[in-house]
Image (tube, rainbow, N blue to C red):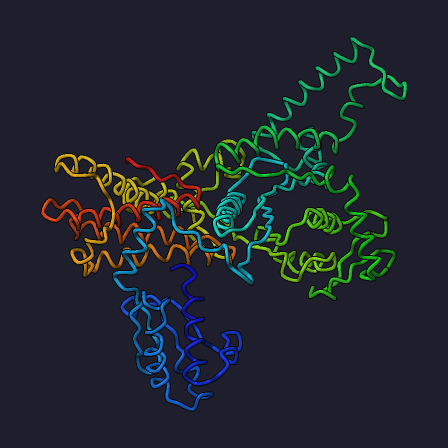
Length: 579
């Protein structure tokens, strides 16, 4: 029942070939406007297509005539037995799952204990691939903040979605520790006239640095330490300049702030941390990338600088790789990092970046193509800014980091589940107002509470079922039994609505994997919770007068629990059994 759009399309094309003796490839959706979509009005079915209107001109028939002929022919297609097919004026075909098909799907989910796998045989853009997701990658100059949170939660959830879709996925954090920001950090820790960063964390680093310097000084004084060159080492040579101090401080921030926040507060595990200085620059990837560009005649010299012909690959202007001074640019380092990724054999590379990097996308993709990546192998997802608000007013201050609101602060206030769910709620390209007042609610107004309560309610019902069966003295079986079909049909409208929504889970995952977004998941979960509560309010589940229907409805509750649990799992949000 999964990937059903493709099944319907194939059946329609076969019917076209049979009825009109036309090669179905002539009517490929890529060449025409045949759309197989879930209709906005659910009373029109589960899928609908405008096939009649599209084929009217080439087949010289009226749209409704074409739709009716196809509907009649499709009735004999075994794969279409699970649908009621209706031709609708002016020329639509509507497909609605039969009650039997809905029951069969629910039984499969309960029997397997999970949503059926559906991507193993996917082809084209959905074929299994090796993905590398790089996200957050904040400079190690301070604690992670709200902007980092949005991209971080998106990247982590997207990695789960892509794995669920059958892809091999690696996640990576790129540590920018070779640029000028490290020198600025050093000045800040030293608290000299060129200090840039401020806040409590800088004060703590300054104190730690002073203690470290005193300790090192005492050691060297006591041991009369001599360097490899034979020269007496002093305290200043341990930390000879602001850049070295910044490097030391960056490592401290990464190990004592960023990594603990990722794991403990955000629930994010990275498969790898790649360091710009050691893994990319010092291992020669930047120079190697430049050499590849030169060998393939993708560079030119102008005003004493070396340029990459990024306009050749769709960029709006060419970019400098090596300055007149001989210094490599940041862009050159990015090219080296791209080569580092390519040599590890990834088919698709996804960068999740802040919206301020919008001008970076075209040059990055151009460099990737110049290095030998396929044109669409490198994707960039931009996330917009986040505003923290309470009672309609923006919250700016943080107790620990000056004017920056850290992720630690936010998670301490609202909890990890709420943070992850709220950040995932909207398309990354839209600005996000994170409503603290709503996030701290413990009521149905809070969408996270609303969804988690639905899962807990499902668990409670299934738990009560065990006692119910024991009291009745019958086996505790939860299933749609074959002999119960006559008893449970026709399905109640609320049952039908619930199963139809559960079936959409696979399409939601597919849509997320194709669009590289995840906002569809929390929206799907909210709708599922709403439908379930409505179902439970109108349908008696534990009915002593109808054991067969009880078992069937318990199977539906179980299928709903499994589906909602998997949805929350993809978001990295817990699915409680009690609340």
